[in-house]
Length: 507
Image (cartoon, rainbow, N blue to C red):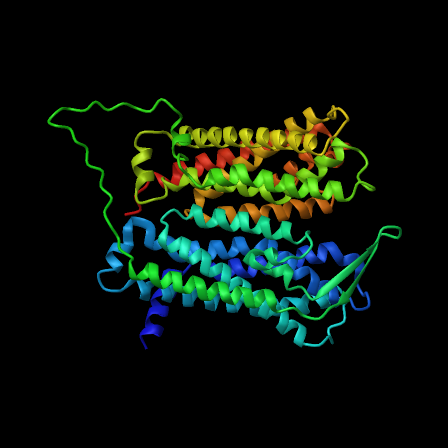
């Protein structure tokens, strides 16, 4: 009875937080992504094999970040205002943790149900055979559920014991990239030990690609449950670690007492930009350095493995390096930094205090400039990694002359994303949701690119800017005008929103 009561209390905390809608939106994004890739194969015989091959790949890309977001949303309320101190006066760390763990488990079960349904919906959308053996659906769902539970256990530990939720979401982002990268490597014991790679190491669908005809054929393999059993082992180990940590859990006051010795201390103001200071010690810097390197490793590996097709030297290497950066990595990095910059203002009544000293336009512009500065550093780091990668594989041709245009337009396109993320993080007072919006926005940009409408979203502008195949036929004037209009629009509505709402106490 206590379990039901605790779950009811936990569900009340998530009222109007749309957690389940995020899970539904994730599955819908996977469905439309698969439909967009394979709608040309509608009606294909044994086309259902494509679905059982594609969903694990989509899960590798989407679910680690979603699971990290779910874990953070389960804990962010308790970490605000040190609520855990109050909860520990009438409950125990074990009860609090395992109540949230059970709530998250039920959410993942819900996710598995809607994914199972989506397989059949996708099959109908693509006119594939739906009379395939139902056991394959259960096998896929079992492997996916075990993998998700392993990731959820990892992120719940991080979210519960580390107050900064940036740590959990950073691990989720890096894990997603690692899992996606491992999918393109020959299977090994190391891959099976990585929980983020289990989505693909448990695949029971293989494919052959004919270089001459450029045709792909899929075939059924014997299901391999070894990766799932490894994940179960991880869950057992992590549960033991969790029980030990909970046994020693305590909330302590961390007060820094200064030894003044009766002397008055002078207070010095920081001369560095205030918004940059808020990122001091932030785990977001891990993603800043690591993600472009991961993208470069994947791109370089793809380039060296397809030298027969990629024959344009530095240009081909650039397309491979920016392939994942355009569509996935860079928007998430920007969303992560913007979330860190807004996080302090969204705690307690800090926004009201801040608005007594600064005008809305000053606050918005200062955050936008800081975000653009960090984004510029990111692009510089991407170029450095790109050149170093080319030197490592002994590229003996000069750098392409178009590179200057790619970088300038890419920087402007990234500034557009910055303006949108500033607005999203302003109106959504949650660290995780704007990052998920950035991820879904990158999917929307990819969709608009495939439909030849690159000016519809801020994210598609960045895509065509960094991809030289897109910039060959692009009108630079239209690109600049669209970018400036997007930036002006999002900054303007941010100032208006802040002027009308956040200056009020709502009491």
